[in-house]
Image (cartoon, rainbow, N blue to C red):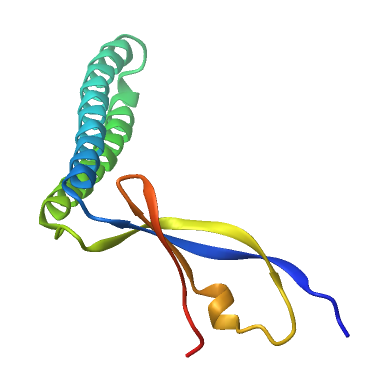
Length: 140
């Protein structure tokens, strides 16, 4: 008879949507938006400084430097757009619904005859930072 085996398995982490959860998520997104705004302002400052330096030392390098900074600004603007969309989605979340927050790994022992779906189908459900359920999918 073969011995069991220890494996890592994914565990889906879900969160029950509450007003508290929505508020915390919205605050995190708003903080990220502020950070991106600060980075965009910093890039504007750096562009001006870089152009002033290049006008004295290497005027031919100005277009390449401007392009580099414009690319960086565009990346941050795209990130801002994604965060703005995320903020709108948070506002539309229904209280009591469940959303996937991420995936973790857990270690488990498996043996011959175990139900694979039950082993792999594990979810942890949180509500206001408390575990309210641990679900195991039963064999299909």
